[in-house]
Amino acid sequence: QLQLVESGGGLVQPGGSLRLSCAASGFTVDYYNIAWFRQAPGKEREGVSCTGRDGLTTDYADSVKGRFTISRDNAKNTVYLQMNSLKPEDTATYYCAAERAHGYRPCGSYVYTNWGQGTRVTVSS
Image (cartoon, rainbow, N blue to C red; front, side):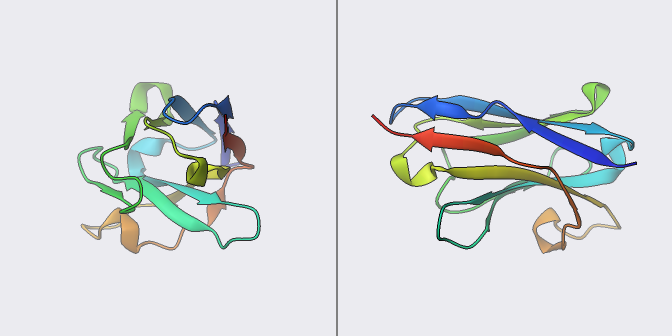
């Protein structure tokens, strides 16, 4: 059974950093695109970043470019989201999602159907 478990969320001051982890089980991330989404209270879910199965192709929302970095460790079957220079507007529940990769379609073009339960990030002084 495919499972994704996020961790690493918490309370951080503006300008601080957090690293989120997405641990996969029941499947091998080598063959999957992995994405991070977030949803703030009262707002719609938005895509934050994704990585293709090769780990070389990545995509970022404009709001996080230059601050967030997605990476994967296929040996650990885990994907990470390093978040630096955090802002109050980054406060949200962050979810990772997985979808089997096909061909050379960009990871941002996929509809993700496998989701974790989320980890809460609060940026506040």
